[in-house]
Image (cartoon, rainbow, N blue to C red; front, side, top):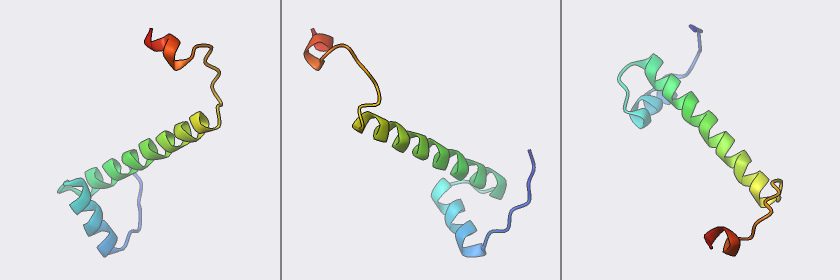
Length: 64
């Protein structure tokens, strides 16, 4: 899908540098995908810390 985004030049240069992409569209797509991945990972970590998952086995039982 194509969209129009206004982004300041220094930020765009930084996104290009960090992603290693040469094309702006690819760089922004990669940056957004990485952002979503990290947000989901953080949310999953939060759920684990809050014991949101009910695992019936202990670590010892799983390793055994």
